[in-house]
Length: 170
Image (tube, rainbow, N blue to C red):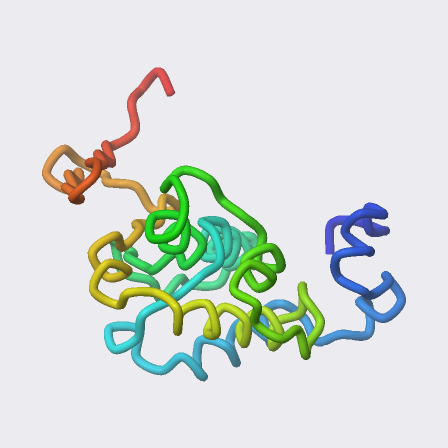
């Protein structure tokens, strides 16, 4: 809707061109179907590869003037972070393809496509300790606390996180 052409890197990652993209269903149609497929949001857990997916989804909902059904705060499981905490230094963030190779998971599907990435993320999850993964849940920052009362102080075993209300100077 905004850009007339893809950046060459985006086109490489998505394995598609602008002509095919223009023929695709609109974001509002796809987002509505996705949210319906999810079911009641108080009964699901979102698992992402990295911290951007839910943020971008909410930005796009806002851009298209669609009501966001997400609660505040929005908690989710960042599988990329969970892998790093359980198998690496806890700070590095590796690509899904790198982790699939590291775990010797067969590569049967393309990367950077919804089904393939979801499939591989589920395969990575099978290698994770469930209790540790749940203990290091993430919080989405698209919605921020509107008052001091809503601010979040989260204590993890290895670190803590504080999510404050916006400041006038920021």
